[in-house]
Length: 248
Image (cartoon, rainbow, N blue to C red; front, side, top):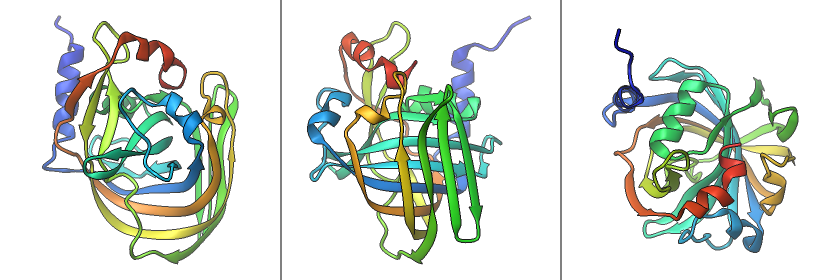
């Protein structure tokens, strides 16, 4: 009996993420924009990727109630603001989630360094709470109260991305470029309390993250971008030096 290959599985996932269809509906991102120590964060970026100025990052927990491949799941991650020719973009050096299908899609096709973890999410009226942990260590704790609606909020995901694919296996790691299509539904300010932890395998506490500048709850629909465009290869050393937050 023939069994599907990994390549066949990726073909099916690409069809699910076709630019002609909506990938996520009413995705919720609880995001805190934080200050970043540039000297510390540069060590976690691929060669050639430069921090935006002033140095900032979005730390988030998210809930996806409806997506095109049938999963309902949660996610937590870090979006570092970087320079691109099209303005401020995103590089993602760390991400966890609680669904294996979304893990395969995001890691293999888009270079998000997804790992399985534990995430709780609660939205009760104007009170919101989220917590992300992995292997028994608390990594992100967020709690707060929703405030005013924001009419001119920055996008949470719809920015130029520069991620890294190919960190596992025999191929060279490479930087890929893509821009998700974001359709805002509503964005509200959040009076937020944030605690960041870390471990040897998930070293958020070592990435130079500082005080919260602004917190928001984004509700958005998301469509898949055009296929990621390979920009340039990285040396095998990248996979070794960035192994902890991406793979372990």
